[in-house]
Length: 321
Length: 262
Image (cartoon, rainbow over all chains, first blue to last red; front, side):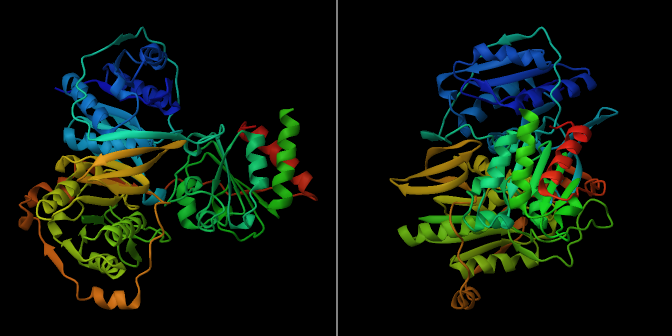
């Protein structure tokens, strides 16, 4: 019978993504609840050195698939290797981060393993041995509590939501034999964004601008810099060409769950609210006291963002100095 | 070039969603239904490739009777024909079952390239395209913002957090769309008129050799136990003051004391 929890971590250039520690921590909680073991997998090239880090968050065992052909993520190679590992370990639950890589992988793996996927989960609950996963649907307008029939159950967790808990385990790293198999795609080039931009979906704080900026994001960027935050944008700001598509927060953009979301000059269209309503604290700055954003915010300021946002940035800088 | 676009009709993103009395589905009446926004990009990309290379664009969609509206919209944009899987037995299928049905339909449709939205903005599962690719044994490239075709291959710019990669896949292949790929055209009036005469094949699960007892709500692997609204936030606390500086100071003080963020 399938048992055990299997976490698929994600690393880039020898560094784990934060969501990997969230996934291992959540995996530990689930494994403890089911009184079972937690195995974490890391795939890449030259990653043996970092594999041990996963023991810090409660992995009983790490399997490191270390191969030149796994240096960059490809759906085929990663699916082949992971499906092989999963078939031999026969876990009951598989947890991974719902990143762009995780989303690409989960659907393929699910079809290969004939497994159900709870995508983009924001909570995992264990009651009487039954796991229930909470996941937003319709862009977060509703939450669904879902159960998965059969094993393995694949759970993709939304980045930035699950708590990272350190729970040191004496953790051994194994290097299993792997089957990379047939890979039908080739990576020709990798283009990294320049500068040390904070990634929207992983940021602790997001400062977003909307139509109210009139295209002038200087104040938004200044506040983001003062807070060490990522910059986001509403759909109208993106449609106007003021910001790239990759900055868009909303139902047809990125879904973010930062500790604090600051909406500057964003009225709060339903499709925008869908992309940020799981933020822990929401601050709204808008000229229009009737703007719908205020009904979703924890703290509101009615005023001109070009006066207010720089003033807040000044105040933050003062405190941080 | 034979191009197939996977298409789904979904509630408009500007729609309010209400939960039906059964507690596990949404009220489907009084909602405006649209083509999934990511599928609009897929149709547009298919049309641009067809215009450059020749070929046909076939729309493949599963959904109830009214889903024909979304298929007709795609035909009005310029797609050539449609296949509509319209069978009450398939209603409520989860992502894996949906992928099985679509894959079965694709056994009868020639394709060099399949294009789909990276997700449908209803259940937000992000799975159907990848699962279809797996069932068909073809490569997938997801969240694509640029394509280049040539030599029996497709070169795609695929986005990820913090950058992008250029991926090459041999055809036949599946790609999924991301915003930024193109600007979908509007259906023209002559286009709408022409669309009415374009062929749409209607299929049932049985037509596709799919066992109706393996799909639909009753056979979901991912079972929805309850649908609920996210918890309401506490009433907003408005920060007021005489000057921007005073308001800013007040806000930062509150954030510092109450939320410990700063």
